[in-house]
Amino acid sequence: MRNIIKNKAVVSDDWTVLRLTENDTADTVAIPAGKVIVPLKVWQQQRAALEGRADLGVWIASSERPEELKDELSHFKVVAVDFPKFADGRGYSIAYNLRARLGYTGELRAIGDVLRDQLFYMQRVGFDAFAVREDKNIHDALKGLTDFSEVYQASWDQKSPLFRRVQRSGVSA
Image 1: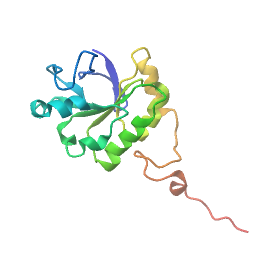
Image 2 (image 1 turned 135 degrees about the vertical axis):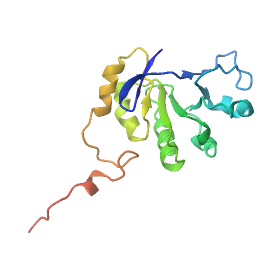
Image 3 (image 1 turned 90 degrees about the vertical axis):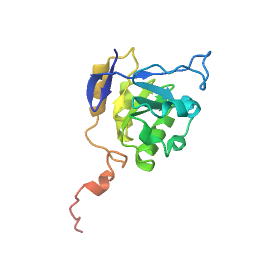
Image 4 (image 1 turned 180 degrees about the horizontal axis):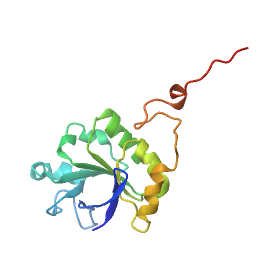
């Protein structure tokens, strides 16, 4: 069983991420038993068969829109956002929109090419779980959540920018 970072701790991951192979199609791929995170396309194609499962999560590709799940988010214990490569930042917007605009309150997990350098910023937009790339040290990556002690900009985790949070004394002329 692999480990992930969840709520700022390294924990065992009991979820399986289903990835389609070149021989699979979203409407015919077999969904394994147990806790599974399926691609958005699979959910859309097999919804009738899947919506009764309590152990279901969905993952969103960086090219997909979270609004497609607007009225269905309550079905999922986990929503994951896939980062196909380190430099693809679209997942940050997807996460922020899931939290701030769509009101998702469950586990929001980053999957794919997830590295230490991203974790601090990912948590700022609403991620609370991270499946760090398997060739990286997860305990080192965990330290990335605390790389900075203060933030300047407003985001999901801090609603006010720094200039609104700092008490300034008046300047006399």
